[in-house]
Image (cartoon, rainbow, N blue to C red; front, top):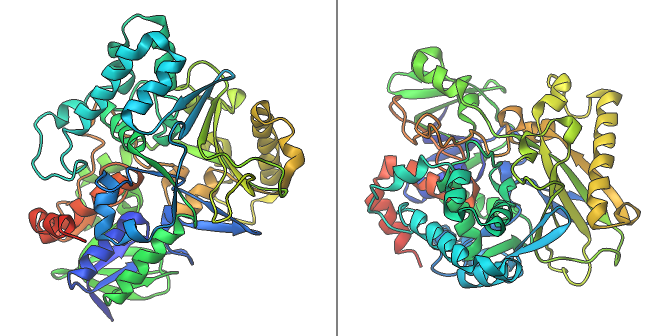
Length: 499
């Protein structure tokens, strides 16, 4: 029988960070991953000579003293990651109806670059930046501080679009600028009626602080954390799909599909809470909690093209592109098939050889799970000719839109890989292939909040559904989870004092 102090279910970023912390603190830790490759959304895959990331395409706030750098220093990530800084004058290019706008790194530079597009909006832009800073100051852990702020809940209950409009006033130039400032909402699957302002502010503050690509793919993060866990005596086991979690006196019994049994004093679930509910023996979960979790709405999924390009044919661009076909940048996540695709996100992956030309291009767009629901009970590789036709037709439609920006792109393609919401679901285990898990709602943020501790003694959550998605959000969430076991002041001092 496999006995541990802590069993962690899933091997995404949150799970591996928890495994790192607790194994370093002397706990016997076992991470169980159902796939053959660990990492969750950190996974990268190779097609030919090209490496593509599945979930983390770029990260923010990685200059010394900034949020993610300060936390990842403790995990040894800040000094070992092979990263490349994006264009300081344009880390995100927002293209709306054929016109391009630059989002720059550094708050003064951010204002200066956009003021070049909107000369009469300098005062508003400074007010916008001040609002980002004021909002994030209410979230102490984001600022590498402990003291809680009484204004945090206020920001969490404000709708992002409504708040932006209230700042902009009636100036027509400001109203167009609001679309530009929201043009990268693919980062959080933005929805005009429900996206909370704090979610918008924390994500944008992080990337304006500094923005980076991972030269060797996001799997380097998983590789480092797994090595550190095993060096501390922990285990990361693949092909271990958890089928049931049962009480066993003052412990838990975890049964896997291979008829193996793991016993642990504590469980940390890094997978989607709705998937966890299906694993827990009914006696462990109150009906009200089960009902609340299962009723939560998830964010939309995506459709992706991963293109290998002919050598020397396509320029490498050191920024991300968010291209919107229409004027309303918030509409694409809700668009039905007849309006698809309303937008796309594109970037050229960085490699050690990145120079004048790119070897690959990644293109992602929103896609609702309803578009592929007819194949939801099929397995990868056996979904039939209709599914292959669906993928090919939608790839062609998306490439038609991309070629408005990059004419003749199709003639430059060597290889093509296509993903759908089913691909995302099967890779990550997220219900219906949801990109960011449970949707945060400004109108009822408490209902969509998942806490690290539960009413089941010894059972905890971590991952992107807990606090915020993205690297900073999941990192802070993992610290909150481990703080339930170690104590926040004790753990925070260890992280703060890390060299």
